[in-house]
Image (cartoon, rainbow, N blue to C red; front, side, top):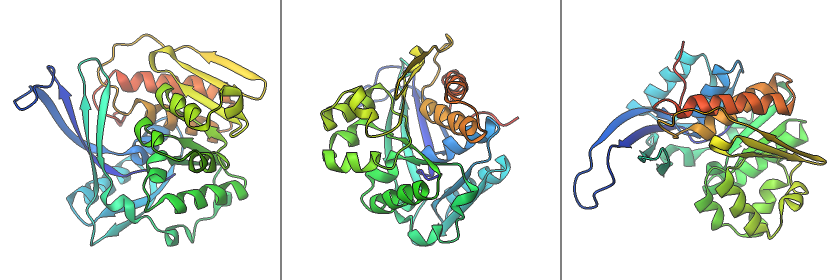
Length: 288
């Protein structure tokens, strides 16, 4: 899998933001980014993820390597002397919503040679985050990796990641991402943006990608495919922090699909992971 590898600084607000002044909050620093969040939830669900990316030769990078080793997650991560480890500040609002402020740093240095020794035949699914595609320095490589995976019979799972950067894409660029996507996993806002950019509807979107799995938060999820329109309910839980809920969904989905489970079973487990995620602080499960 490929996605941003970051140090997360999560700011859980305890009041409305007081612009130009102080706002009480609880602040935690953890390991995160879409790549590691998804990998951790996949491992937690019983999968065997393998993550590729870049970090800096700094405290954050060392912390990340220790974190992955502690989880038993396999990785091929390049440690760079001339770059610092990526970082994101996440604001957890009072209503459970989150706002993200990413700084990709070392993630922008992802290079083709890191994949030279990869035996694609040993993988069943390839997850890629929209953040790697938004980044102009890694976009062409990301698209090449998607095509390579597909050519080797590996199903490509694309999480569009964020509505705001999607809205700035040219429709042809966005369509080029979907050509090699087997599972598109957007939330509602991302879905609306994609449909508007491509000037299509749900049926038309299925012509671009065979499986559309829409994350609906507390409302569950919907799976669209040729001849399929299936809704899934989510359990009722108290929302403590929604940071990383989509990554939890994607990680569990990947683990179940890679284990040969059907799409409905995989979605049901993904919803459970997402529900578990919003019930706690932070973007990753607690290691047993």
